[in-house]
Image (cartoon, rainbow, N blue to C red; front, side):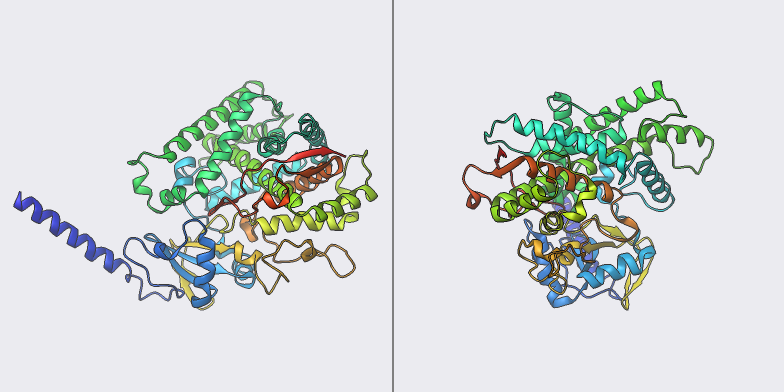
Length: 492
């Protein structure tokens, strides 16, 4: 027993020595400055687990806009402020194209698909995905007509509530998801479809988990994931359910595929896969297809529907802004004609409201982390290969050198002194550079057409009045996700 105890004690001492030396093993590298890390924990004790973005802003005031922070044992370089993020993602775009192999995403995708792949795989899949989505109308008239048609279903669904309080989460998710489902699967789903409800519930719960403190713990200490009980096991099982659904749809497409007449994204990928089946360097393989489909479904559903849900919350919170947008819509479009994208230039205030909702929500404050795939020289510092890089989008969307009142909800941030819409280069809600969101033009179209249709047909309020709503997000980590609430959609 004494020998065993001695061996255990010696082992613990050795581990502690190694851990203490870990914090200094890169002292010979010209890393950006940052707070001193603790062994194993890194700088976790200095980060607010419920709102880490607040801690990062505070630390950057002491250590500067390019800062080294250790999240557990993982070294991260955080880029703070508009000028810093722009210089990295736009001016040095090639250096910063890498995507971090986040453990949860790796566990879900096994490295396949578009979102977290790198190198040749990423370039092939991104080029193909962009061109295919554009071929099927992303950002064009064909897609506009799909969204207009889905808007009618959304309006009908809210009208069926008969002005009774309802949670808008799933009805908005259904509308948005049906657009991406039309692109990817070649079909839309009825709002009462139980299987559709189940898929949307999984996507919602997955984003909530990834943005929760437990989800961040699993990312920081991934070696515990396989050995601990917890919500992460259910999420992984739910993702398997999503994958099974995607596989089922792909197999049905295989049985009815006509290469000369592709119906959707899956048909196009299957055709390309068959064309390159004898090419050993091709990334057009089955697993990449399945996980790219999953990427598109998850990203194409949750981010836009969450933004719409937050938009309605803010419009209830600020009834004067809701009324002003409705007056503009009534004047330009009226209440009978379906909104069109061509109307946007004649609706500067409404367009400014939509942009300000996105800025104020700041849905992915840390961006999807980047990665140094080689040693990077940036602003006189060295970012070693293998370092996670965080373009801190929250700091861009709250940069007081770019926004007059960064902490307030003010559509005027996007209006000039004549009331005309004005762009701001610091509007980086879709990130920037070569890793910018592939669905940006689709999301912009959806947000405009859906929200204008809703304001055209309803006035929104809530049971407890505007003061009962708390616009502070429920989760503020990977994603900033608004709280659940009840709204009343009163026909106009």
